[in-house]
Length: 179
Image (cartoon, rainbow, N blue to C red):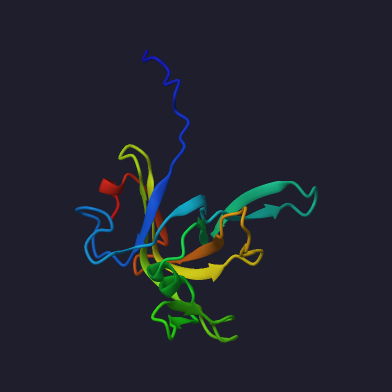
């Protein structure tokens, strides 16, 4: 019997990119654009279920997987032009040549922007990476953008994965195994 791995807990940090046509080579990969410094991240896989209960005793008889959306939440810690152009629909070049953001940016009743092949590349090759194939950009509803001399100015974004032509919205694993 093999010895138990006593160090199986992971702290996975990484960097984000989007738009790559393949994941071979170096970050941000072929045709990809890097998305700056990121902080906290979380992934919520599709996990919807329906519990079919018996009428006579209200006990569960079947549990049916109903799917749902994949969500990837990210705290962005930088404000470079690539980040603001990709994430804020109302961004454009200002008179000084820098990027300016108009809010709300997305007209109510229209679809927010989406990014193709959003990739989390972990800092260590042995850690899992993540790909959302069609990632709709949603600014987290509770986002507060700090203006403070004591707190970093960051913002949170939720990416909602839409299924690709094969019906897959996200894949997780070693980058070398993702396509």
